[in-house]
Length: 200
Image 1: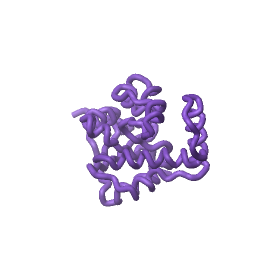
Image 2: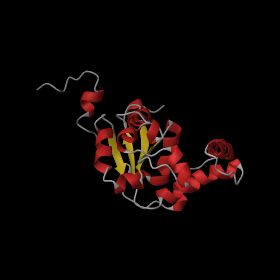
Image 3: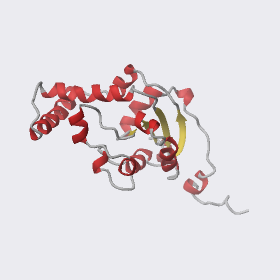
Image 4: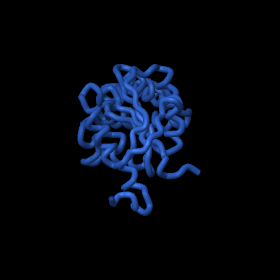
C-alpha cells in the first residue's frame, strides 16, 4: 500500500486558463495547501493523448447522452440522434477544446492529494461550483450555455477523481523520468512526527 504522503494526483490547466493568465494563480492555490509539484509541462495536447485521457465506455456515453437529451427537450431543441451519439459528442467537443491551444499538465504529491485538489477545484460546472473554489471564483460558464453553443464547458482545469483515475492519467502525460523525487523543507512541518529538528 502506498504511503498517504506519497499519493499523486494529475491536474491539467485547460486552454482557457492559459489564455486568461491563470496559470500562476491556480498553481499557487494548490501549492498553498502543502502539496508538492513533482512534474509539469507546457504542451499542445495531441488528439491521441486526449482520447486516451477521456477514455469512456458505452454505458458512460449513454448516461451522459440521456442527460443531454433531457436538456434538449426541456429547452425545446430538436432530438436528432441517439443518446450514445450525444454522449460521444461531449468527448468530441472536449477534445476539440483541449487541442485548441496550450495546456499545462502537472502532478502534485501529498497526503490525500486527489481529494485535496478536488476540493480546491470545485464541481465540474462552474455555475454550481462554490465560491472559494478555482472554478467558482474564476469562470462563469454553465452546462446550459455550453449545450446551447454545442461546445465543451470551459471550466479552466482538470483534476483526477478518484485515485484510480490519477493512476491511469499520469502515464498518458508523463514518463517515469519526468516525475521528480525531492524533499520540500515545508514537508518537515507537515509530516515529521516529533518535530525535533525544528529547534536550534
